Image (tube, rainbow, N blue to C red; front, top):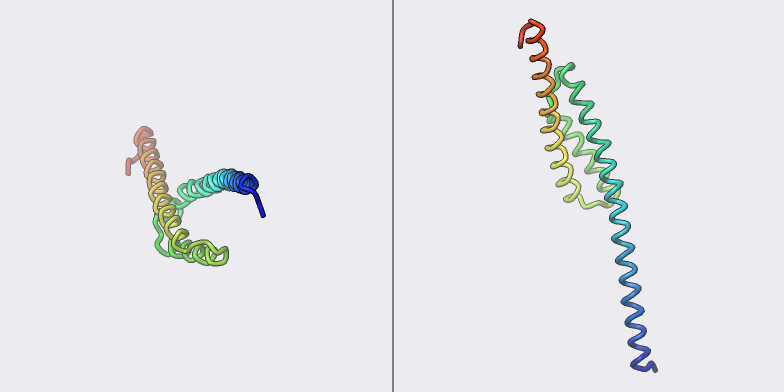
Length: 126
């Protein structure tokens, strides 16, 4: 039989263990967030590369077939990794929408820059 004092010590010990576990969870989430940000930055660099290459190939920023391909790939990976499909699709749709808009801005800025350079060189502006 445990005394009230022993029960209190056990409860405090359990609470401290839970606090320690919560601290560990938060630390790991922070580390994972850093990794995710680093990976997203790498992905953004590839979007920037695509925005440089696509105009020369006559490819628009938004290629619906490629969007479907990316979403299908992510769906498969999400299922394999037991990630919520709802979460994966929500995140990647937002990521793809942002990426397309970013590419369009970059491609538009390049076109504007080329046009202004051609104009200043005496060449045609379109």
